[in-house]
Length: 218
Image (tube, rainbow, N blue to C red; front, side, top):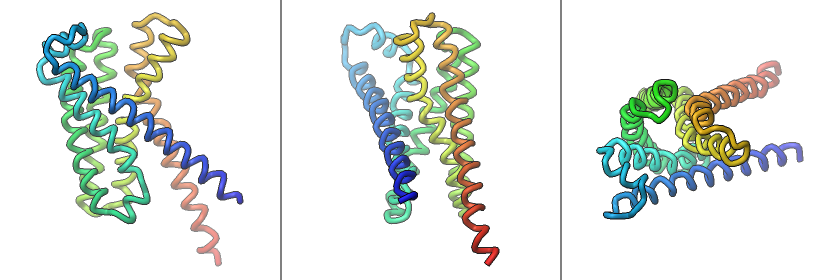
């Protein structure tokens, strides 16, 4: 019975995460599809059309990474269908590479100037770095380190979700000024996720040590 409650909480958290990732991913692909239609009449689409490849690359790569992130986190798939895990992992890393490089370029022209641009630029660099290190550990066969670095990468991928939550709460609920909310979102969307990920990883390591202690003492 004590194990049932943590498992239920973990399952609900995983389902919520997957649904949020899917929702933002669908939004990205829908926006991308609508923006490619001629004369859509949406001013955002007009801006999109004049942005070159940066915006479509960011939306496509980020949407793909978001869609695959819950699949990559699935222990069941990793254990029972390793081929699918590797395939989706390669596609995920490709999506991060495309979106991260585009994000670096977009950060130079971020709304709000240098203050928000630096935040988004550091996010793109951290996203590319954590994913690259994670892939490197997978190729070297260091699976424990691979999992930890990919958790960090997925935490940064999920900053697309956190960004929209911060904007929604700041603008829609608290009615704060847009520049202030956008600046908070540019930094908070990824630093919060990364901090939460590090706490979860520390908890997992501590729990693993606790579970090993009784057997070693016997």
